[in-house]
Image 1 (tube, chains in turn yellow, blue):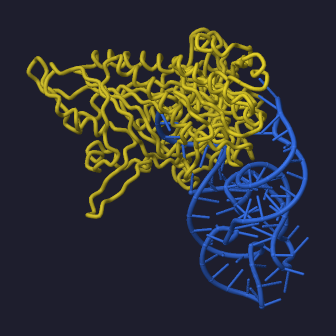
Image 2 (cartoon, rainbow, N blue to C red):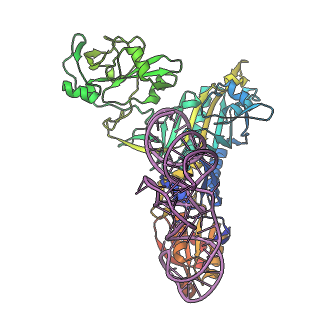
Image 3 (cartoon, chains in turn purple, blue):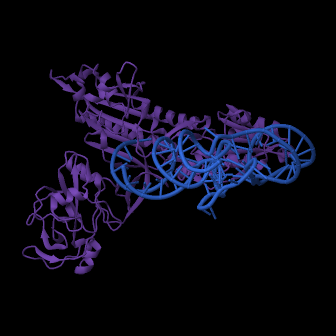
Length: 553
RNA sequence: CGGGGCGUGGCGCAGCCUGGUUAGCGCGUUGGUCUGGGGGACCAAAGGUCCCGGGUUCAAAUCCCGGCGCCCCGACCA
């Protein structure tokens, strides 16, 4: 198929928009792929929508290949479904009301709706089932941005599996996981399949597909030897060994006037920062104060704390700290604290300097299980000085985009919504579910992040808006058209730049738009009947006869 | 929610601090001439509620107050 640039709505920009920082944001806007309507709300222009559809088609083929069935569920959703699963209080949820006063939500995902339909599954004989759709999602994000990376409205391919039991779920989960690996591979992306944090979906196990990128919102932790990779929110890596002073029989209070930081404390006492502990009071939804304790040189990973507690928490403010500890931040510690204490595993062995819960004083020789009774959990954020838990190798940290996320949901949705089936033992049981999401827009953004140069986008072949971009220079319009027809006959989608523009402008646009092949017909072609075929990725160029184009492509 | 920045023709910006004729510049757009393998040159022209509302003033893009929108950095997710 041939598309003529002269008739295409393709507004390319010479300069990037002032508010764009991420490479994908700049290039997709400059290349005329997308335009912003409001924060996190975008239109796909003709070129951008072509790319989106190519991503969709790859996803569709891989879903169909594992027996997942396409359908379409609605955007407007009665709030009752979300009330039944108790997700109606989620802050990101858009709510609206019709003229009769009936409440609706715009779905964050479609677990509720698909489970509503799954109530029609009656018997184990109908299982397993896998369903999917490409549906709009709406999320009232606090901070949308970075082009297509964080959107308030977007198309998601969400798939759902229904099984009799955990073993069946495991099988469905692995089928989806395999499909995801193939999808990202076909899209030409580098991704890592890593353990993740289930967040608001709930459920037992989840895995993220993280794609390293210049701009992103996740941090991927990997081992130099390739035997470890995880999202930093769940990464458990090995902290460096602390250097401890001589142990004490019991804690000893010491004067530490003016010292409110770990560095100041370690310096005053001439000890390793890793031989201190850091108290970070948090409050739960119902106002209880929980003390999170990590080693002095560590940072608390809040996602891990929330996971350990099983509920979200917020850092306590000064008033709450005073009330619970009788001291201010900087002198807090576990000894004598009445509430719940969660300590990082790094504090299990050894004696640490901790706040004394009296301003200007600390305790030396504080030992877990002797001087205070904590629950232990992994709370620390992986640090650059950590080593691989599997081989001791050095770790690397990269920003990454989450392009896919798959969850084992279990009965989190089927139970509240009453989606049950009759098993072969004659008993009624809730369906065991999984859910599997991919954002095509993020795949687009990731492809650009991972593959571009100073001149523009270098699309992976499978995602390019057109396979070939034929540049017609003045005088050679006829040859250009013949070349385009040859390529089209060979099954390629062709963009024919027949605009009345200067050569430089056409080349610049071709580089910016980033189709894999560029074919130029110009004055030289009139002499020898050949055209220049240039590979966008490598820059390699060769002169070919028009007749040879088909087989070359 | 906390912090920072911005809002002026389609795009990128200047002007604002220190109010004062017709609000400028580059790019783009339209018409013309010459050009024509990496964003060319010259001539002519079109195009603006200076984010919105209020206030101060003889006079507001400019000063004050209040909104709204957008971007970036810390707590959420495909």
